[in-house]
Image (tube, rainbow over all chains, first blue to last red; front, side, top):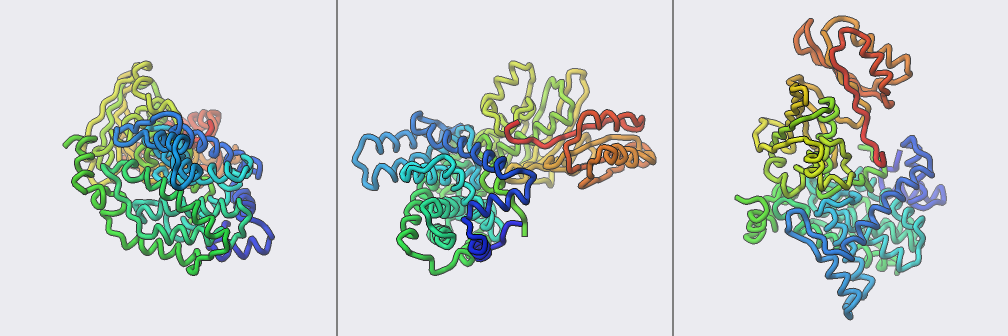
Length: 291
Length: 226
């Protein structure tokens, strides 16, 4: 059985002298009927779907089914390629990849829920961009996905990864936390450091509500994927410099759960609050669904 | 504490935009198609709650038609399912309705087959792409399709359960969950059996040998990469 907390994860990895991805892979073989190789290849398959989703929107203008969003990944990628950007080509391109996944999702393309469809852009954008920057192999990216799933399992066990239950902090927050932990480990950080990164990310996104315009996974979801990506990447640098989260991962996860439960129903994916009920939000809803 | 596989967290691979409104809808429809037995002429989708209100923006309509065409939730043709249905000569319509006190993402399938017979199946998309089928032709049932599932309609006489479990035992298949729904005492009953291993057509044939079995269907879970 997979460990129940971050504390246990640190202990078991120290005892076995292993990384999060190694422990997660080992644990999955015990829980499923699959071999280590089969699990690794299944995850590689997910990585391939992620790469396609993250690249598609960079080269084509993708339009969502409802017509509400589209073409932003293309714009951002062109900007990264052609203009002098403020945060650098690396960061702008990472955001473009996140937007691309969200646009592919909203256009009924193929994505990997990670952990959900609404937050499907963050993990691919972060690991692909970090992998490219650090010259990592495809196998290294699969390992990063394993690290991310291990951290995600602990969040799901102790809190929630569903926007309907915990707001956007539970979806994009969890995705960014998983992604940040994964690249810290990819950069050679320790298990503790990976969890510091996950903790810092969730702290910085704590309280974020889920208020989709017209109830669709488009506005503001796509841009929250881009901002979650930036948060995951910058946090990894913070942690690799030696900075720690004073509030440990397990405490942060339980705080996220408590905050999620105390959000009113109108701010948990019902489209009854927040941006969804602003005059413009309601107008856009009418545009998609009529009266 | 609930247990998760890594593929519950990073996964499933699916066609967007929504696990409940798109992936779940496709699964529901594919399940309904299998229960109906195929040879479909016409389908009426009765949409309830959030399905009724937001089906267009979420592509729920395309996902439902795709499922009727036996497409999986990760099939890239899902987006163009209307065109595929036209090619196959399957007609369909969507009706917004109120199905009563049920989950907000519920759909009732009224499936008319080429021989004129009608199957009615109702189910809900309960989150994360997971589904629950709870009514087949007016008989209350309850299953998720996560495990191989055998559904029977049979004459309500002694020995039916014994016969089926014997066939499964002989093939070394373990039963994980089992429910019997008696519609009319002594006349008609339905049984839903969930097993731990894939059930083959050969096993189904053996179960069918019993004359009391009027109808039997097997639903093996949809595996990614099939």
